[in-house]
Image (cartoon, rainbow, N blue to C red; front, side, top):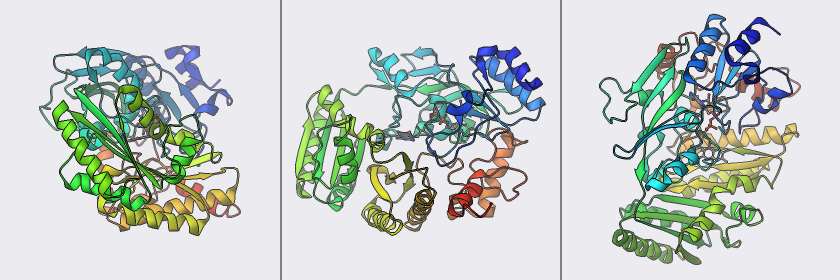
Length: 484
Ligand SMILES: Cc1cc2nc3c(=O)[nH]c(=O)nc-3n(C[C@H](O)[C@H](O)[C@H](O)COP(=O)(O)OP(=O)(O)OC[C@H]3O[C@@H](n4cnc5c(N)ncnc54)[C@H](O)[C@@H]3O)c2cc1C
């Protein structure tokens, strides 16, 4: 065993260091399975002190490293090169402190998103950002990705809910951001917000202070089924134009509805509908009752085929089951799933969906759509067989065109899933050299040697400085004989 691995074992214990090729298999990718690479080693620290000791060692040895939560990222963020050590934070999963007066919690980064809400449920509190992966993904990963979720339309993204953090910087120094004791106003530069969304390239968050929200008195969930996607999208526009701010506005298209209804996530959605719209309202009883009547009226006005309202918690859970399980249900359609993440202005949703369908037909790929309609945040999903190089190439090409379409319609290449390695090529659809230089300088202030999660987020002008694996990989897929 090389000296570095021996030293890692000395610091963490044998059972917290994995080096055998078979053992590393589970860390060779995240949810973006097009890009796979097995790391040099995986370590599983259980405290800030252990993370710090590992990072100091790796810094001194000039070895790159990659922080990792649950690995549910969909853009290759926690996938490490063969020379890098993965610092997996799964063992750091304690809720350290809850303040019911100042409404915050201090957690370790490996705490699973839904586990935090479960831990404070008896206090009438919850953690608002709710990625559809919330039963698995971690608060550390959410912070690094600035994750969203169905309820972020009303409550805001992760950046609106993180108050402070303890960070192990890439050289092993410890830094405190914001106010880990829950104060809302940072006394100096708001670096918590700068760190949020940095995708593991600025350092490792080992303690995170998050805002907790009081549960609302009343919650109503409505389902509207429509004969056309246009009618569902118009209903969303009508609701927002009327000044209503539902907690969630989610749409599933017909292919998704059918996949869900054929799966264990069956929710009783009408399988003949072209689109299902879920609207959740929360707040004081009388306000929610009034708003529910308005939403119903908009659904009717737009020709809703079926309008349903959950009357109790069990019914509400059923209506959400299909939406939350949609990605899992798509596992039935083929062996692999490429989940895209583009944004368009809400008023251009219909246009975007027509364009996406045309791109799918052009490349002969199987597309489904499930999306955060209130935010204009689309998730076109391509089901494909990763063992079939030609099909994978068509999938990748379709994805590229879909993201270009989003940008052409005035949107962006990512709403919440990040850039990782997947979108290194796509970033240039939105930003020029000057923009990227500013971002690179900010990153260099945190991560001057570039060893903390290298080759992610910012496309490199100097291929020697970083390993930008995705463009090489895409070239290989598109031209397997080309030797790129
Ligand atoms: C079925 C499914 C549904 C999803 N739905 C949503 C959704 O609704 N909204 C949404 O926004 N995303 C969604 N995602 C994407 C994903 O769940 C989020 O990006 C999530 O925040 C990743 O968390 P994780 O713990 O899995 O992090 P990982 O995937 O392990 O890592 C993500 C990134 O964070 C970095 N990182 C992890 N922990 C730390 C840390 N402690 N300090 C510094 N950097 C760190 C990693 O290096 C990596 O770059 C979904 C994914 C799946 C598979």
